[in-house]
Length: 437
Image (cartoon, rainbow, N blue to C red; front, side, top):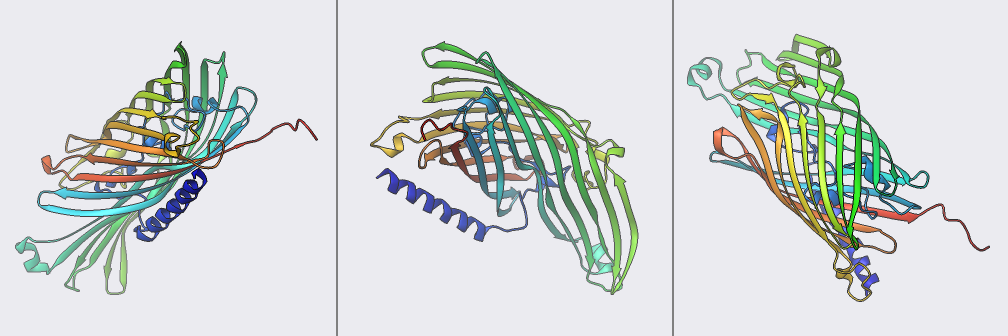
């Protein structure tokens, strides 16, 4: 019976993935009007496991999953375990501003991570995941009769695409079976395009095409620690902390402005600026967390993160700053997260769904920017579960994030979204010594 359920689960997952791939827009890694500023919409870190726990993970030690939120957590494993995680995300959003409403959906590969032991109580992980995404498309027409009476109809269009990814390499070690420390090297890379067009219906006027092509690079480091203290029986408390250094942003920004008329194009501006020379920076980040768990049956966790982007240099930099009726400005981002997990009976041999892990979580995020002096906040509820597949710790993690960003007050755009996550947890035992020949 359990084997039949596992086969049905695998078939259902592949059907879901196929539908998502055929339905997705194919252009954007993410889609939000707020991604017009800076390096775009910063992704929520973590695998499908972390996401269904409200984004927690700083104080998580779970040998069945790879936890990429704290490099010290990589040592929470069976000593001979090889582990891998591959994730997919599908997002559906409804936007509202005043009486206007619209919707959009995206689909993307989210993460790919490998982890294996090094020596005794030490372990290693390597992977890649999105760091930020840019995706937006605005259009409007000129309605001022004094202007269009002289020039004819004028249409405006602005759009942006691209992503910044982070490749990471981390290692951790545990001392005295209580204290774990870890370090991680992170490399940022990606390309972002932001384009604005102004077109005249009257061919005697020159249309304008302007924008920026950004090539972003960067290197930073992340440090983590976790301390586990037994409270009695199989109950223990874990305290965790992480710190990611702020780092100089490298790469370059190509800013251009062209005038087009018939087949003639005139270059009004074309500059290439080095980002590092302009003082552009990634924000630093500090995180703390505390969790209590009852063996492998249940756990509860609270996390807090703070990241300072006030010295990013985005506010006045071409390609990063936003000019117009509304103004963005760099700020300090904060996150409050909580999650809970329970497994009814991990070793049940009769009822498959008693072996599954069930999770829920909540979060409240404050973005790394302000709009006209107003904070852009997000809040949401997460739900998820892991379906065991075959032997060892192999499984399929599924989750949903139901939330809202901003509101319709102060002429802001409200986003209400449902994000679905699927993670494939792969586990095997390596380096076993043969006892008998």
